[in-house]
Length: 70
Image (cartoon, rainbow, N blue to C red; front, top):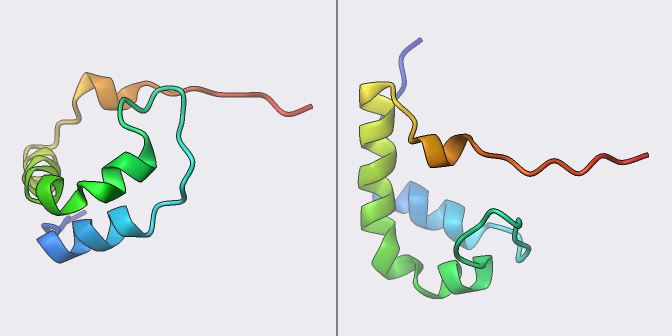
């Protein structure tokens, strides 16, 4: 499978379209992330592209918080 790089516009659009809810594991609340997305988007784009090109995912991205629904 071949992955393609994401662009700055792709990342900026994805951040802006996030729902305004956060997970217990999110270090930055989504409304704050949206407010500073113009500053963070270049760094997020770089980080995502390095992860895809190297085939590695940071260990911190592998955590999850699961709430069972009965």
